[in-house]
Picture 1: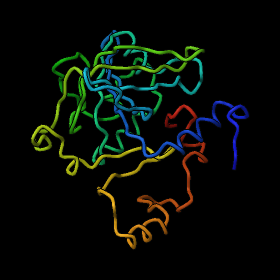
Picture 2: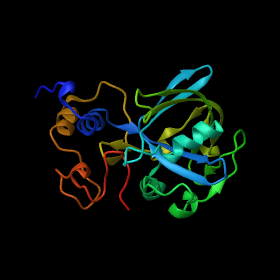
Picture 3: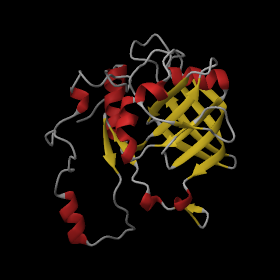
Length: 237
């Protein structure tokens, strides 16, 4: 299959991007509005972009109505601060629910049912129970041509790391149980390796489909289920 990007509308291109760039880490972002209302949202167009200063990037789409900007971006833009919390298996249901498009006057910590903890370097709280939180200040915002999608580059001004995970100046990722994004679904990161692997093991692993951990059949895709997912990456309530 050969696909020319010029033949794709925005939704079609988005479906191919999120199915091609996998797995994606999830930035579970907590912010405060200028009125002090708490907001949390998962952002999977997320990566690190610098070491000194340590920097991360987040690409944030508009709401599903394509008219309003997402509250997460508005808060980051207006206050200049945010926290990126690590999304892990024990909190994955809350991560998923935080993708619902609540109205701006709703405190999403309360709506989703997660507790907050005070940050050290910025005003927005971090999410209680998240094993790692990166406290950030906005460094640069790069808007799309239509101004509706925005790339935010943030400086990490401080870390909050669970004590047992901080080992010799590094993170013991084996004890975290992180989850990532696969198109409109999730994946649990539960193994690690350094190549080369035994050829028989490679053949065994590549000869079978990915195992599903839920009730759906092996060819199910949430993208095809319009009752739960939108092309804005949001969850339908």
